[in-house]
Image (cartoon, rainbow, N blue to C red; front, side, top):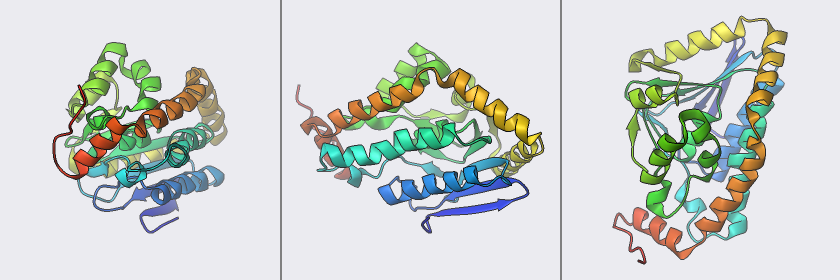
Length: 257
C-alpha cells in the first residue's frame, strides 16, 4: 500500500482514504493500493463494514490517469483495465461485509467505477458526477453493463453519451446515490451508517450480502470481460489518442468527419 492510500480499522469499521493529489487520478500503483486495502478489509474478520472516502477537499476521484492511455499498447491498457474492472468487481463481490462510498466532491469516469462498486453511495450536497469519456474519444464501457440497470436505459444513455456533469440531487433522484447529506455531515453520516452495519449479526450480514450479490449479479461479471475488450479496442485508435492529446494540451480535438 502507498502513502496515497491510508487504511485504518477500529470498532468493526475499516476506513480506506484516498489522498493522491491533486484529483485522485487512478494510476496503476494507486489502484493496486486501493485493491490491496479492500482485500485487507475483506480478510479481517473483526471488520464488519468498510468506508471508501477521499482526503482531498471536493475531489473524490477524477478517473484514470491519462498517462495510462497515451501512446500505450492494447496490452498495457488491458493490464490496468483488468485491475479496475475485473479486480475491483471480484474484491467487492467477495468482500463479505458492506462497503460505503462517501463521495465528497467530483467523481468522474474511473472515480464513478470506484463509487458504484460499493454497496451504498453517500454524496455530499456539493458532490458532482459524470462520464466524460465520450469527449475524449473513449467510452465508459463498464457503465454500459450496470448503469441502465440502476437508473434505466434512457437515462443511462443520456449520461453516458452526452458526458455531461450532473449534481448530487439529480443523482439521488435517479437512484444512483443512496443519500445526499450536507457537506459538513458526510463523514459523520458515513461513520454512523458503518457503525449501524457493524452492529448487526455478523453471520447474517455475511451470508445475506453474499445472497444479495448473487441475486443482483445478473451476469455482470461476464459483462466486465466484454467491457475490458470494448475499452481496449477503442483506447488505441487514432481518434482516442487525439482526444487525449487535445485534453492534455487544453485545445479542441480535431475529429475526422
